[in-house]
Image (cartoon, rainbow, N blue to C red; front, side):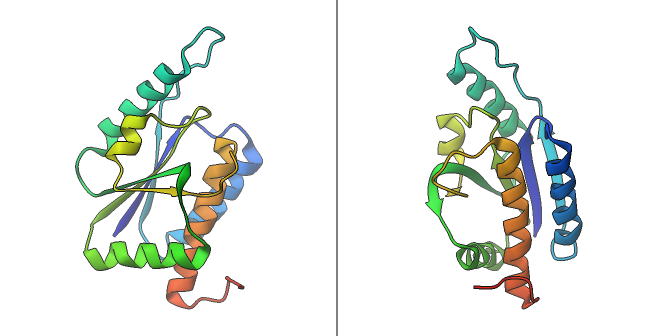
Length: 157
């Protein structure tokens, strides 16, 4: 299985970017992982937020195509704890999927069309997180999930 992480735009804060890189370096020891950045739309004062979400989501759908499982992270998704995420990932492995696309949206989130296209919609938190922080939380939780699956001491209940 390969993890394909899709982020909208670049990470704005270098300390968060460095932390993301730290967990990515650890994660690749367990699973091949690639990060894709799709272009973010400029958020102008008179811009329609729905249209921005649609454009960004269209770019994501063009990148992802039909190959693999599409997992979208959204606060309205199904909440899992760390052990639950590990189990979810194990189910994906057991199904034999070669690629798993994991998407976090930009500052305005994702479009309903992207949510409808997803195989699963999961939540990092019921709270709204800044998209940069959501990326960090996602990568850390993926690393944590793989340490749980492999029995590596990292996760404490």
